[in-house]
Length: 84
Image (cartoon, rainbow, N blue to C red):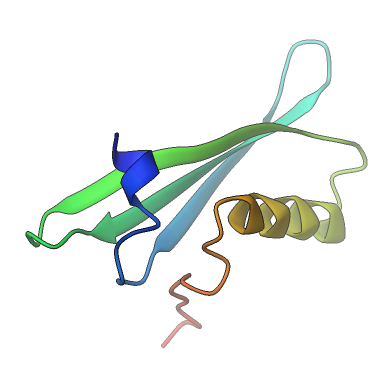
């Protein structure tokens, strides 16, 4: 339910990812969204769990993440922290 509602909130969304390799050497990424809802409750949901083709370069990982965000139509709502 939370995943379906993430688009309706006007808040910013923080994203975390987890990348790992399966026992048969296939790469997978989980993309999780974190946001505060209208009741000021922290919510989180897995947005995508997807296969990532090799090689797992910075460009491939970034492209995979951007496509996942676009699939959810939240690529313009992502909150960033540049180490400040």
